[in-house]
Image (cartoon, rainbow, N blue to C red):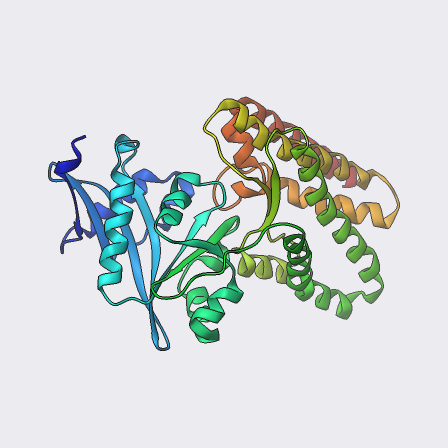
Length: 355
């Protein structure tokens, strides 16, 4: 591809459907359904053909005008041709020229190809406290209500302001504390229902829930010890509303947090290093599910939660891939298939045993 023939320009009227088509072709399966009909977009055009695009929204936040980057994509046939770098840079230049005070975006935790381009253009991975500091509480709520943040499991929030520096989201032990705190708060609706129905079951269910959360974190950490990379823990921003809905329905669902390496590599060895912690976690949850064979209520509660999580731990597609199956699938489809089959057989056997 000749870079001097690649044109980045505003979307023209009548190109909305073509932008959507290219966007859905660039994403996979269920994720493609989230590519929305664009009101504002930039198009990458090569030889009169749209080969990429960025769809964005303008969100007024009080006195500040913010732009939310809804989707950014390049035709798979043009990957590695420099389309993304030019598309991102020109799009952000165009948005600043529209008088915006800042921009936000959501990116999947391990989508390094995307979040590197954001960071190269000044974005920082940040949290909601920083969004409130920059746009106020109403601005944060508008970002929450007009973007997929409530459902974006395993995704991180990125932000850049035109005239102010952004406080980068930290990693480490404090994030571990936030992980447990967020999950405790989001499970309160379910516990409120238990208080009305069966107050005596609270200590058992709470203890089992904390045990499973610890298993969720510690097994992943154990897997990182087999890697040559330094790792740090980070709580993901998205998915809280989905967690609340499932908790009200009576099924505890975790806010996702994971261990992340300091650098990413596109090598089989690195993909193995990413998959090993998730395989540790899957094995531990598979064993925890067997505790339901016990007659002890505490272990039966652990088994119920572990069985519920196992269903999501084997789904390698958005929005559940960040719970573990995505990393396993990218390393080895055969190993992922093995975990999926074993999990389904185990769950069917446990169901028949309980029944």
